[in-house]
Length: 397
Ligand SMILES: *Cc1c(COP(=O)(O)O)cnc(C)c1O
Ligand SMILES: [Zn+2]
Image 1 (spheres, rainbow, N blue to C red):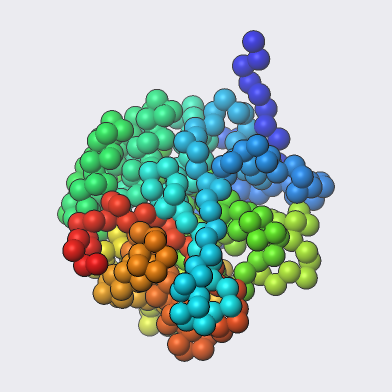
Image 2 (image 1 turned 30 degrees about the vertical axis):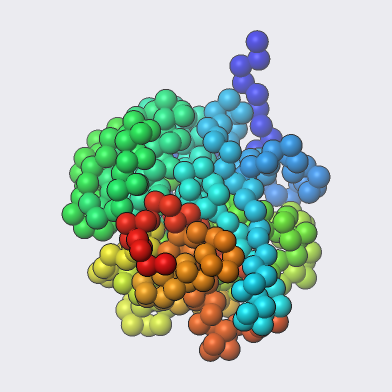
């Protein structure tokens, strides 16, 4: 019996995102040893690879396996993540006189958020590299996704979550058999507990950007956006940025597709907008020059749990994406998020997470200021379903 089916992954190295030093893509890695910063996967993209190589039979993010890091098929840990629909928001578009408004609905992923993409990839690679158990500090969705994929892979799962996280997130982790530690504070306090508990490094810490593969799962959103729009990109993409893997990942995908020739050389890449919660907006504070960086930023809880990330490790990479794409950063209050949830619910039949609602409210704000024009193609990323957030918004319809 054939025990190992090699995939056609083009991965060849990992690279320190701060200084470019190269690391093996075939050994277990965490952050870079040189700068203690995120490692990014590098692929051989100059050898021709036609769009026809996209596996059409695969209705998931795994259709792009050549540009993903997994080497052997039997290590894939999948629950059907990715290839989510791109929905046209016709009613909102006509109400606000917009030429084209689309929403990529990541709420339809396994475990109800786009965290499924990143954790499917990270847990698959962990399995491939012989890891026995994983640990993560989480605002909610990442923990649920890690617990599910660890269950599927037969791995131990330890999740550290703020005590104030809605019950549905905790409850779902228990159903997957994970150990859950409740922490007083935000995700950075959970991260401190994880560092202490896992000081011997026995478990793989899959915190955002502390291992190189969650971002590789998240980048598939960029490939899908291009494929679903027939290889023409929108003018603007709005994304709710916490740790920033989606923002950085989508931008990475666009760069890769340019090298592959999947995007025409003259393709204008979208302006990328990072949306944060007013209660926790470290990126906006740095972007607008009110602080040098987020190293000492103190955030408050928000109903958009996924945005309560006060000190993101990937801050420099996010700022680079905003600069390179000529994008911007916007913060939205919790009250505005509820208003956005109401509008998307009543006019489009969508029950989006507060993070997704924030993105729509940011688009409205940028249309109002003139930064966005009504004749541009606008893509909103709804990163999760509202189901698990009921406690945060109950009765506010
Ligand atoms: C985690 C999360 C975010 C933020 O994603 P990052 O990749 O950390 O920027 C946004 N929305 C939801 C629903 C999330 O769970
Ligand atoms: Zn370095």
